[in-house]
Amino acid sequence: MRILVTGTAGFIGSALAERLLARGDEVYGIDNHNDYYDPTLKEARLARFAEHPNYTHLRADLADADAVNRAFGEFRPQRVVNLAAQAGVRYSLKNPQAYVQSNLVGFVNILEACRHGKVEHLVYASSSSVYGANRKMPFAIEDAVDHPVSLYAASKKANELMAHTYSHLYDLPTTGLRFFTVYGPWGRPDMSPMLFADRISRGKPIDVFNYGNHSRDFTYIDDIVEGVIRTLDHIALPDAAYDALQPSPGTSSAPYRVYNIGNDQPVQLLRFIELMEQNLGRTVEKRLLPMQPGDVPDTWADVSALRRDVGYSPNTPIEDGVARFVAWYREYFQRGE
Ligand code: NAD
Image 1 (cartoon, rainbow, N blue to C red):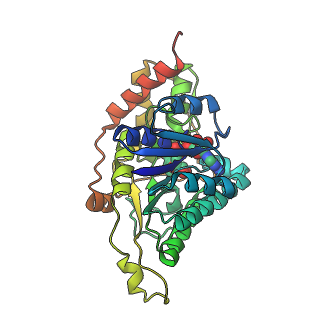
Image 2 (cartoon, rainbow, N blue to C red):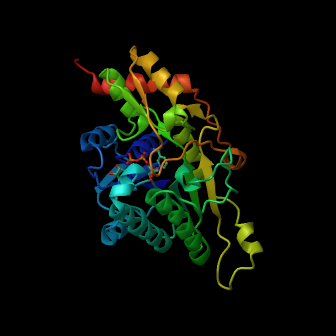
Image 3 (cartoon, rainbow, N blue to C red):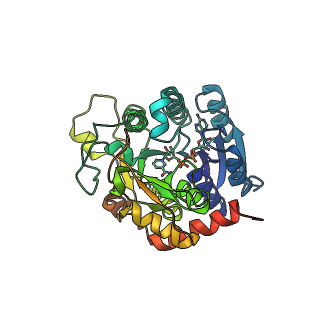
């Protein structure tokens, strides 16, 4: 299949592109290589598959509609996975415009290109952060998600609403995936696993917010990639829930779905740090601090809907995932030390 993936220099996008190429798909990647975090890590991720004969790369910004349209015209993708976005909760408190450009303007450009290009299925990244102030555990897809506590979360919820419109107004099958704290090799330097690994390796204290009472549904990258591919391959039945609303004439019941994609096994942050310390062979001081604005105390994904519909079944124990992450971290950052 011809699959266009945005964000292929990113953590999840690079892992996905590599797997799609390995199974024989043609992949067209778009990424603007922005400097939100170290761009040399992005180059190194891309180097894993950039020379593959079935891979084409375009360095462009999703907010540039002409560039997006040219890419779609040239490649004529059958399916699209939109992962490019301005990520990060804390960064959104200080840099709101970046979220509007990439996550809203960029996303509408992707929707338009999918609509005009008659794409068979658009899968796009949402986030567990849409659950915001929700305290009901585990987070279920039926839970209300109308209290986002950061602009990042609001932009992801907006993506779900925008996709809903395009599914029903323009007959575009769309599926949103709410990712839950993804970790593993080639991970993100702004996220806790990499930040912890850096502090522990250098023997520096770690700031642990919410006095260490946080828990996160850490999900291993390989399980995520498997789930994204299963989702992409499966085009759901028409949207019966939309039909039941007696929609206005001329609209379609094209499949519109949103799923959680997590691990369904939350881990206390202090336990996660302990595993990192064991693998790195060093313990450090933990400074217990209050919760930060925009943060949520716990995340926990109910993944039963994705399990039922596409057979998603995350199976990497946290102990194995952390060991593989630390092995990669050592190889990548500590070569020659
Ligand atoms: P990432 O930052 O590593 O990857 C995103 C990539 O998109 C980057 O390489 C960046 O250069 C690119 N990009 C950003 N804005 C762009 C734009 N306007 N035009 C073109 N390229 C642009 O992030 P990731 O962890 O791989 O996340 C992928 C997606 O999943 C994102 O949408 C993110 O919000 C979402 N998500 C990730 C997690 C997680 O735990 N990693 C959790 C929830 C949601």
